[in-house]
Length: 197
Image 1 (cartoon, one colour):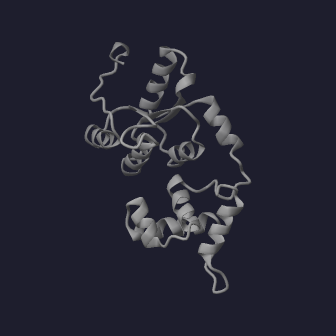
Image 2 (image 1 turned 90 degrees about the vertical axis):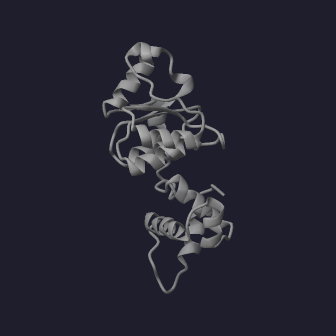
Image 3 (image 1 turned 30 degrees about the horizontal axis):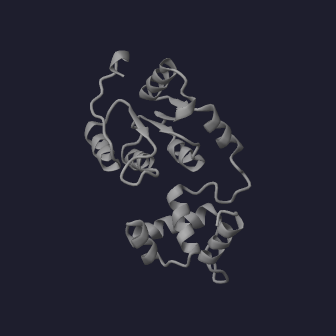
């Protein structure tokens, strides 16, 4: 990176280190691997999403092995730009990569064509397509029969946050309050009907 005019302010190896570095440095651009310790699942992406919620438009270029359609959609959802999502095995040369880093640093986007194709194809018939990954996790736990308190305990956040996610799920699925229906049951039925269970 330094050979191409970038100053690397910090290299980190874990999700918590990434969060601290992003918040303290607020870099001109960050290159983030989706999978980072301690979980080696989606730690880098989750941290990126959380920090961008607090610092909208913070330039982040995500590298991934696979297209995670929900995460790509959530990264783009704030409309702030300065975001990139590239597949590691499709970054063919340094010039392409540096060009993507510069575009993201300049407030633009750098999206792998495969990511765009999956977003456009998007599975429009999926009623859950509008849900964020966290909302899907909450809905999945609802389908397991968990109460808000149990969901909060499993996902390590407050019951109030679970309530907000649940309200968002109902709104996005078009489930309105009624004396004749149980919204949780209707949301779980939508989840089960989507084939994701």
